[in-house]
Amino acid sequence: MIRPPLVEIRYRHPPDRLDVFRQHLVHDGGDVKVTILRSIERAGPAVIDGRTVLEHGSPVVWFTFPGEWHDIARFHRADGLFTGIYANILTPVQGCDALVWDTTDLFLDLWLDEGGPHVLDEDEMEDAVERGWIDAPTAERARAEVERLRVAAEAGNWPPAVVLEWTLERALGHLEA
Image 1: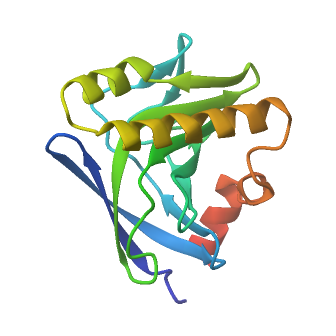
Image 2: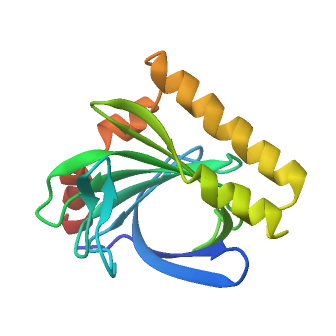
């Protein structure tokens, strides 16, 4: 049995926080890289519209698109129940041809579940701009990206098919094969 390689993903959160995730690379399609985090460590649950969508111990399937200003995740509860699709607006990931990737979180997120798309954390983005953590051109690029994804989701053209195809079960199957 050959275990998929571990990728170290370094998420910078302005002004000075760094989160490092180690995830197994279960698919490298060139234009998309699929990784799985079997159990996320969180201090508390992520709650959207009063519903727990991610919690300590939850598995997450991540999709990194080299050159894009977002990544995508399939969120689950700790028991494996799928809760929705989450897009993190960020700088294009650097190092995707190696096993250490770097990016900077740009605060905005898009959440998609049966209730449709919802832009998250606009207040955090405004605060980051006001504090000078993100410059105006980068903030505008982030806003344009989240709006592009929101419009595509409302039209039924987002997320990409690969996100729907790579379920938790499929990712775990590649991890355990």
